[in-house]
View 1 (spheres, rainbow, N blue to C red):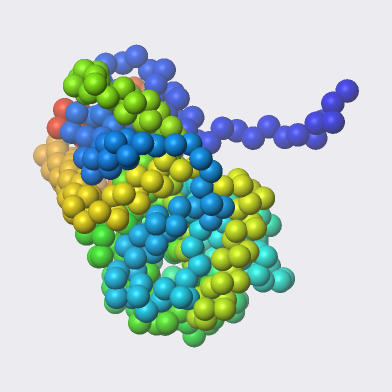
View 2: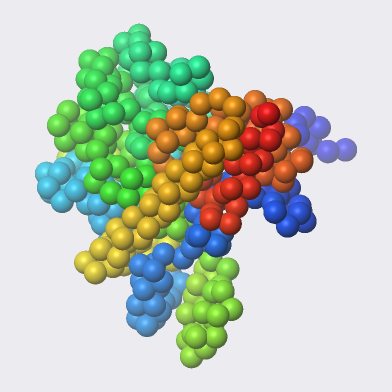
Length: 428
Ligand code: PMP
């Protein structure tokens, strides 16, 4: 007898399952373009130099394992809000902001959902671009929101379908919520231009739609944090709109999950600092939910609600990642290093995007590939059929998401030609 007779089997998350399959594959030329995690030119995970320095400072200061406040580390929350809005807008908005540290970007989206659910009845609709990051529907439908997809991308032109976007906003139910990828749209790599963002903001304001920004790639997209934060600052600053902003430090600070120790060579160099390695074993997952409101009273009240919601979800958030991020953003020298690190990552991705494009052309891969260099961010949306995607995996050991989204960060000078040749052979 079990009380779980009605439990359904839920298939594993496709991208995590693909990574597991890749890890099982013993082929020497296998390439993982599935999961969106940054890799350096040797295909290895990269600990940002700014993060290493922050960790060293923290370690020298002595870390403890005490609880953080429920809302998270105060210095981290402030430094995050200032980075996102820029100093000037932050100074203007400070008293009208509610912020709460979260379990990375996913946790921020979830907190946003909890707060919005508690503040609006009946539950508003959430408009979600199609395609989108696979977790959006799951996060919001599990909270009970009616989710509605709208056409974001045109598979024929392989570009943003801006007319369909505008028309969705013009006809949306007033008071609804719209999920906006602040930059580096996942999976398509197609973002609105500044002009289009202005139009989107105006349409949303006219229709009283609430912008919920998913900002997982600020600074990582273009290498310029301010540039990537344009849309958020425009909505909040110039348009004076209320907005929710869900921030992740997974990509732009390389704080994905748990640090598993230094590579052997580093370890040897750091022999005299074993506590550094030990401290580095603590989990990270750091993000922030930020709400820009119109009044300081709304900010105080929503922040108190976030505190209550966080308390019943995780009680208080993990400390180590927030301490690192706070150290990086709150120290002038480290912040500059971080900006350079983001240029390094986005620059390498851009050069691999171009290299893939060049190789595809030189091998004479059938079709046009201009969309690949029009896109930006971590992902390339190739436009291959599911059959080709499967063939690439089974016969060439090249792994990518079923919709032919590739993580460009998985490419490097040693494998990009092989990937281009494999794609070409599959298409011919
Ligand atoms: N939103 C988008 C669009 C993403 O691509 C990601 C990372 N894959 C996230 C949110 C959040 O990821 P995390 O919870 O690891 O910060």
